[in-house]
Length: 513
Image 1 (cartoon, helix red, strand yellow):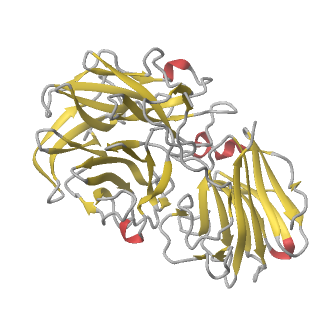
Image 2: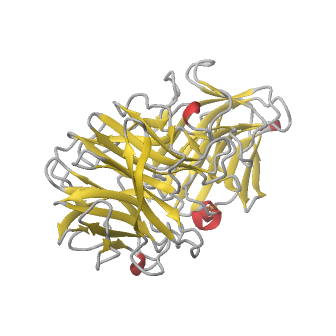
Image 3: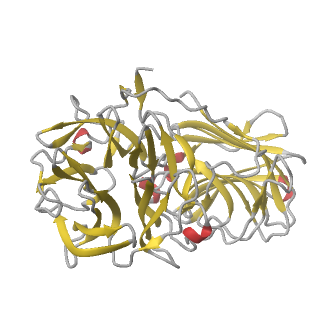
């Protein structure tokens, strides 16, 4: 392979942060209201990434109960220093706990510590910088008190890694590239050729997103914005460009002395709609006059680049079908908010994922009987095998396409063997179609060709047939639903309770559009 294809992490993988430890690279992204939180990926060539697990995988680490859609975990940063990995992050709008915290681990694939909360660290989007002087620094963003809407500033304070606390004087570093800048955020500090480089996002998280940079001779400033700002953006390319909303970058230097940036961007389709959310892209970086040059030669994020000068290290490809024959769920599966109880089992009926039917619903800010994974392609097939005997007329189980509690699509088997296709938009349900199935196992599925989605059913091993007409998938986009996440595909059981649903398998695969 001489070139790689962007995005390197398709589907909802926003706010990427990366670090290097020797010849290994580790990357984390935001997860908002999903549990476990903060997936951690491993690579040896910056192109191929495998999911190791999650930084926050214990309920004690992550109290997400009652968190609103697109609340929760925002913008983590991962760093490695003297054999210890650090992740800092912000929990937003938590009912039990909110604010900034740090967790550590000697092995990123192992167990991470309980969060150390820093009540003295206000704002959001925290980052750590370990200087070659032996001192460590915490940076973050906060809104300017009494400022105009969206006016923010980046501040810095020394971090004590032994006591997990901020010490010393606070310094305001920068307030943006323009007098009327908005949402200067995602600050990361680096030291390059003796100068301090402050890399930030600016302009909000959508079409006007950008990357800006400032430099200083001393860690505390003064910082001077580059005359070339924004050093990366796609807002001048128009809404028809295939890659948009470029920003929120983090830099890494390889052992071969090459520089790269991971950053978020979107891939709109069917108009300016992006159901996949904000994804992780990889871009080469060079240095000129003390500042970074992103994507030298083009100045924009491309779909293909030459591979880094690192030994290629692909990982075994994931099986498109999960037969639920492992003792624990694959780390690709997530829950909606932190579960208050264990409602799933892989051992009650080996070879099946058993979900207990519970009254908690995906229309509520709750943690329902639901397991999910990301939609990662514009054209895809997703399906499950289901055995289910409702104990109550209101019991139902099946497959969902979830954007948030007020915007999703449900394909559920209920009483009298009826399968109902329901689209929810703006908090209101619309019954699109129903069909009847005979007794025994069934298969339920969704397929998409761009923004044209279809619901599918089959009895046992029989042929697929459509439920109703194809429907417009743009109801599942950020533009319709708001928020910061992409579509997740879920297995779901809901009703008054007293029974369970058995899922024999789940298949997700890309379709050639």
